[in-house]
Image 1: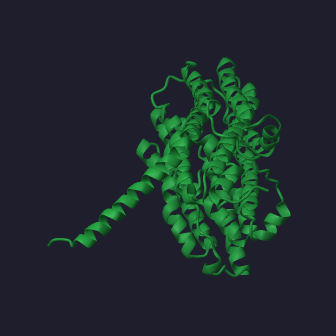
Image 2: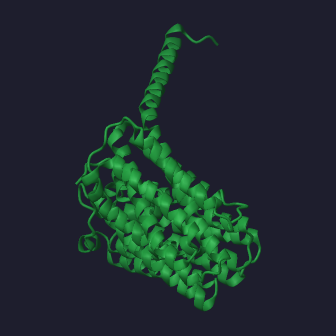
Image 3: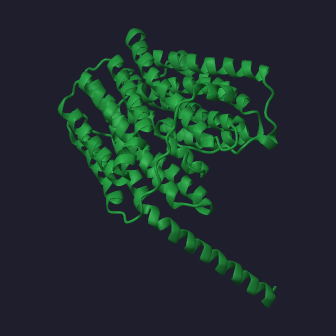
Length: 436
């Protein structure tokens, strides 16, 4: 039962090498901690900001339509932030622009507390979306500059987990909150200010200019019609749900804790669902996997309409099932588009699709808010089901017209943050390709 000396030596040598690799990995990741910490604070602030407004708005008696316009304003600002932040950074530098954006976001949330009026909140929410997108782009650009291919996967995976933990953690902080006070508005402002400290005092060198994405619809459409059409519909569906889920939950009489969970659990379920959905899309035709996810999303939406659930558990269960599908669709579409993209087009394709998603996110809350105002809270799921039905039908039509791609020509599915928390720089960080 004794291991020969030669084998012991090999075991010790292997253990020593593994230990050195782990130590080297830690030493290389540690300098990135300031950026990751800043990102965490930013996402916590964004999570609080995104949920406190509709909850407080409901208590103030705002209409569902005006609350939907908050989502429209945020999405419009987010798209503009993705487009114009590279221009600002080119003129003033990463640290200055990041600091200005974080400080502006803090000012905006405090102004929202001071002036609880929907027509004041809508433009303020657009400014908040601009600031959030720009700040996230700068963090992702900086991370991309600091990593190489040997640790890129770990860094991107860590960033994705921080993205999820920060955004949902910020929402969960509202459990049991007294929304009649300014306390949580001030808390969000504090986290926005905390986000600028790690980058402001960092001694790391500033990265290269940000990736500038341009929306080239014809090229995207020629690349993959399914991707363009589906991502627009996903933007409409997810944008409407993200903005109006708290409105639905409050209107049917759920308590504040359940409202918060109803908004958070779908995102978590979507993150978990990306694992099996991604594996399936790598193995089978991604369009067929998209059809299946759309079909399950329609079934979950139908559950709300047919069952008209009133209890917390029933709503949370259906909401998690719906979220698992709708938040797993976007990565499928991006992967499918990149399968058909030309060499070196990964980043431009992903960035272009993100802007198309943003356009859908502008439309979705508007339609959803109007539908709820006219027909009641369940109308939210009717609009979502309409978008998913169109995805299903269009995808089937394209399957019949175009042969599936050979497995050897397909790339790998990439788990990514929810699209509303992604920027064009997310594609750069994930893909590790040069800037254009």
